[in-house]
Amino acid sequence: MRTTTSRRTSVMATAGLIAAAGLIAAGCGSSKTATNSTTPTTAGSATTTGGSGGTVPGGTLNGSGSTFQANFDQDAIAAFDQAHPGVTVNYGSGGSTKGQTDLLNHLVDFAGSDSIPANAATYAGGLLYFPTVVGPITLSYNLPSVTQLTLSASTIAKIFNGTIKNWNASAIASDNPGVNLPTQAITPVHRSDGSGTTSNFTKYLSKAAAADWTLGHGSTINWPGGQAASGNPGVASVIQQSAGAIGYVDFSTAVTLGLHYASIKNSAGNAEGPTLAGASAAAAGATINADLTYDPINSPAPTAYPITSPTWILVYKSQSNTTKAALLKAFLDYILTTGQGTIAAKDHYAPLPASLDQKAIAQLSQL
Image (cartoon, rainbow, N blue to C red; front, side, top):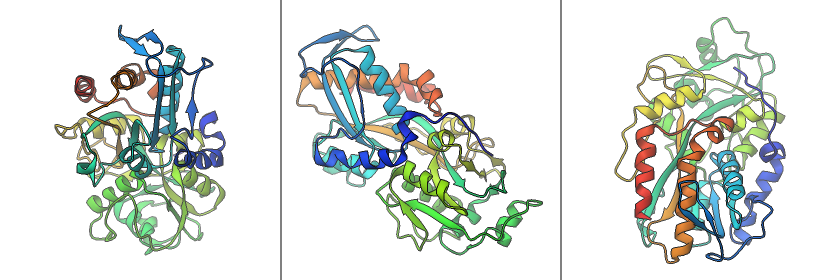
């Protein structure tokens, strides 16, 4: 399957996104900035009317983290800033692990993350998890002669553990009867940075192909080979430039760059392409925990896309600056209301299930 659309500015220069992700470490989290033309003010120096009828204090918020949610974040930030003169929100997409680390070290006000920090108990003041959108993780590939491809969990595991090395291997042929597969060598592409996308992709393999996938799951993996790249845009760039490559890439980036991506056999045995409807089906059946974490991966729903990723914005429950807390609450409210409509759809993400969205809005009172 292949979907194409005009390349957006935010991912048009892939190398620029990757380089931008490092800036937050040197400064205070402003590697990718979405602002309006208004000169930023210090926190509390101005207020504007909020979309929900309240007031939004002027000021600056800094965030970093997930590249999976970055396309959505950047457009939501631009719209939020434009709606509220005197407000500037910065987001550096350096990977979920970086966002978690920056938040732990108080370098940023919020972190984008597709996974739950293993050391969550060390965040003094406690964490709140605000789900934002839902999206597929694609298996994007570069085989010009193959425009439709289906892969089972076992085959994917064998490709990324190095067992399957060529595109005409019997396991791939079995998944794709009648497809003329080339003798091309396979180049698996994976993340070089600590990544929530990696965590969710390998969680899927651990669930769906346990007999073939013995490398575990987490934000970093001891990969047996292949090629590494930073961020979802970096993986996508390597795939674009390398015949025979395959890698895991968020749906938004894959669509924007016009990559080919495979349909995946789900737990019901159905081959499902990475679609927003399939992601919504996976999320709709997931159990929502009290802290608003949930796991839509390898859903049993018959129409679910099996590698569907959750993603959150993480913030401290206890905020020392009441004005900044009010600004952060207004921003999150915007994400959970206005952001769930045209912004999410334009950037190729599915909105949250209504019940989860309402729980997230209610959780704002805890901030």
